[in-house]
Length: 92
Ligand SMILES: [Zn+2]
Image 1 (cartoon, protein in one colour):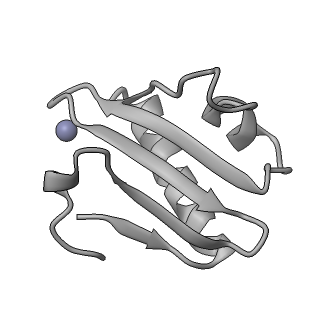
Image 2: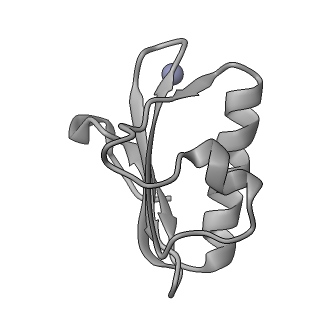
């Protein structure tokens, strides 16, 4: 399943879930530093985000990779979803 991000608040919520999952060791960030200017850790700590965010995480338990991407200027067009398309079965 995937979580659709439409409003800035949806992104904030997705980021706080990601942060919780990182701090309890469920997820590790695997964003390719060449792909993006700021890592999730850097951006989550600051209050100013780039207009377009794109991070990748990996589940430490099952190895599933997740992508969190959104356009924050309008807070639209984003998803928190498994990278593997077969794992996306429905929208939340
Ligand atoms: Zn997992």
